[in-house]
Length: 280
Image (cartoon, rainbow, N blue to C red):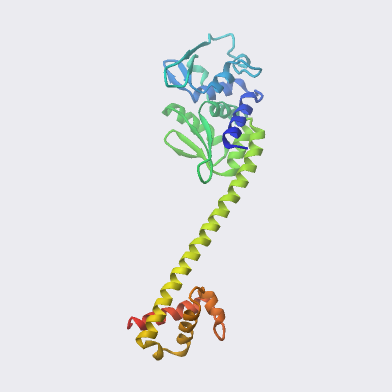
C-alpha cells in the first residue's frame, strides 16, 4: 500500500475508534492545539470532527462537561492557507490524567491534534510537537507514565524504537494501524539492510580494485628497475602472481601461493615490498 494511503487509513482508524475516557481525550486533544485567550484552534479537520462531529464518534457529548459549559465553534479561512477551526472552552478543561488508562486516552487526543508518523529515506519515527512550554511540561509528565523511550528537544517528543511506536499506536486506538506498521517496518528494515550490504560490497570491490591497480603498478616498477631480482623468493612469488592476475583479490592471490596463505599474510608481504621499493 502507498505510504500516503496507509497514513490516511491510520488517521481514519483514529477518527472512528471507540471512546473510553472522553474527558481525558478532550484534554489531550486541546493541549495539542494552539491557544490564545481561551480560544483553541487547529487546521487538522479530523481533530475537529473527532471533537464535535459529524459522525458517530463525537467526544464532546460524551464528556462530563457537555451541557455545563457553552461550546463556541467557528471556522476561519484565508487565501493560500488551510481552513482553521476555533473552539472556545474554559481553561479548567485542561487536566493531567490521573493514571495510565486515562494517560493513554489523553495521548490519543494529543496525537490527533499534534502527532505524526514519518518515514524519511531511511528509518521512521513518531513525533508529538506541542506549541508552548506549558503544554510541553504537561506532555512530559504524561509520557513518563507510558514507560516508552521518548526523546525530547524543546517542545518536540519523539519515538524511534519500533516496538515503542507499535505500542503507542495500539494504545492510542489504532490497532490495525499498529499491526500494519509492524509489517511495513519489517519490510523497510529488510530493504535498508539489503541496501547497506550492497553498498558495503560495492565499497569493498572498489577498494580491492584500487589496491590491485596500485600493486600492479608497483610490480611493473620492480621488474623494470631491477629491484625484483633482489627480493626474497616469497615476495617474488607475490609479485609474479599479481603480474599474472591483475584483477585478483588478496585472498585469491593467497590461495594461489604454495603453500596457500591468508589474505592478511599477502597484505603484509605487499607492505614489505612497498617498504623495500621506497628504501625503508
